[in-house]
Length: 374
Image (cartoon, rainbow, N blue to C red):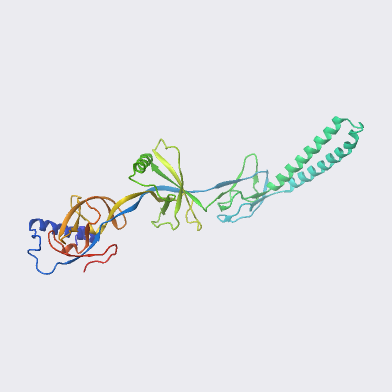
């Protein structure tokens, strides 16, 4: 079979077009002259207006909601790694252990200095009231005790830093240091990276001219703002649809001067960690609601060689008429009709090969069902 007719829809449209062309040369008179037998049954749908969501598809990439670089906060030798690479970790979980011995010694020394300074302060305290010790000496003792306490606290903090913990909960990447590595606070030695995976961000871009056009359509009443917060769906790189819907968080306040694009950020639940940072995907964003929209099934529309679209109507007298229409965007099963149809029109959706312009038919209104005429 010719490639053109390997597509059933194209084949049906072509047959109908040829039938209409033949009818134009040999049009049967209204009332069915030239046709014997009862009027054939055709299935029709009655045109009505409805509110229809206007969506746009925008490319983007997945980004972690939070990302934390784990760095050494004290100098020392790594004694152990306490996590599985690529595993989930929780906030506060110990990831590495740095040799704590020198910091334990510093803490003990600081504690001893504090005890000594506090003892001197307590000894001077009753003596200063009887002028046995000068006020200056007592104030110096109080200051020394405070400094010793601060040194003790710093030593305790540094000892705690020997246990390197996860700053956030999330998925940890590869280990960037191994046991025996000398890490440094001054050089901020990177040790690992933790990324929050659930929820997760999806950053998409939209042309600034489209943003302005959408705003003008909403302000003019051509479109209505979505009743709820803007919802998104994702198409993954393998063509599948991500099962969880997302929500639009915000639109960037500036336009990228190099591309003329505006960045939008959405948030998606990611309990199964299907979305990975850096992954490319296509987001479908509901931008508004178009009121009084007319839809017709795609199978009812005949598109000629020049691209002109038409449908076959059943008139009030049950005769067939050809109606030219102007098409808008296509959905999965329907066409949006911009002009040419009005509410109440009856459009033939099945039995097109039996219907000729001007002939009488027996219409069967199938509403929104998919039953075909026999």
